[in-house]
Length: 301
Length: 337
Image (tube, rainbow over all chains, first blue to last red; front, side, top):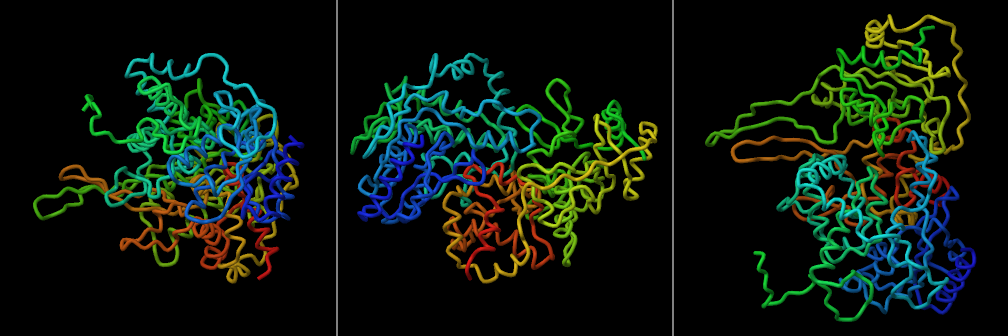
């Protein structure tokens, strides 16, 4: 990883020196060894702070949304899943390719700084020995799919066994069991919207949940409003979730949000596929559910 | 000194629960927080008096995330308010820490002083007894003493309990309310010699001295933009914070009936500062980020004489992006104005 850090720094420094970028998105170390955090370098001097290590888990493509209306040219480090996030932004016309210099890093799987901090915090009874980010266990694409330069050796997918195994378990439940399962999970939601904010596919300028005229979803933190929130958010992810797993990772009450996303990924794949969102970028391509056709059979209506 | 032996802890809670809704720090599955003992299930739950603290602070017991205020019914042109949902059932928060008690003191300041008294808050607060678990082992993310909180000698506790080892707790009633609950369980306590632990050193310190004053001239400082870049503007820090109290008042109607409720709101949300005419005074992420810290470190200090942070460290632990209020304070101290 140290070698990759040095390579990233060299690239970033060169880009600044050649005036090819205005900003470079990577990570820096905070107070604790396990605390890698997103870092926005704006000069060759600041490049020295950059690190890339086993805790560089965040999907930085989401941070590009902050600059979508600007003209800055931005260098960014992406892992496999993050690079699918870039495809998401390009397909959604939130960013143009010519403003980006993408440094792809083949990802060996990441550790989760939130997990590590939980262990240290004293806010839980038991420590979690395994610091691996849970999301990496479902990874099908550790290698970047879009990049200007690629670092590290290609990695095999980390997902072991059958894909969508957990989704199939839920599908096998009776409707009542399933309702009870999700009621139990979603009733604890505190509506902090961290899942939405960490999501690169949640790039609407005004989110339906922030609308007040009309107010589509109630603001009470109860099972009914919480379910409404999560069902709408999940359906907005249909065919768009790039499986970076950040929503579930950042959830402070551990709602298994990727179960909902995986279900929709599975459905889109079986109804309109084979298809996985953000696996390749083709200009002008129209992925499923992103186009309107007069002759759409819509026989479900 | 009165001592609650390890074997009696649950009995004490049970005895108190006869006349009170007792909230206890519990590990419930992956979550930790103060849950009502009525919902305690020994198959799933683990009482946490021996850990540092819990994720979800106890503020929701006196100031729930969602709280009905009143119900109404319309009849023709008239609207009748037919229900007021004041909640004054006797409650005990059992085993909260000093930082979280101090946070409730701040809620008291907010809801009881400066010419306004909130009756919904008052009903809950006045009927709540605070049994504080004195803290002798500050954790990795703790900095309460830097924010003017005493971890082991809190003011305003009704009862103070001290972990004297082996799972036993020394028990000191500190107020009339405290005496009254002690009376309820006096047969479960034993009289014995007990040495209180010594307070261990804090691993983290931050110098808040002069920060509020300095912030007056830092509204347009570039540090806000720099520091706000990693922030997602989600509401984790505000909802996990024991002191954050912003709320919204809304209404739900179904046909002729409805109710008005209030629910927590977060200054991190764009909608929070959205105005009826369409203008938003805090449109940018960095403006919302700045507001959160100015409120905590400057505005509350100016109005109430203390910062709106008790150093519990929760926001630092749970922030998905690694934002730290300690670093913000340090940056303010270092900044050139």
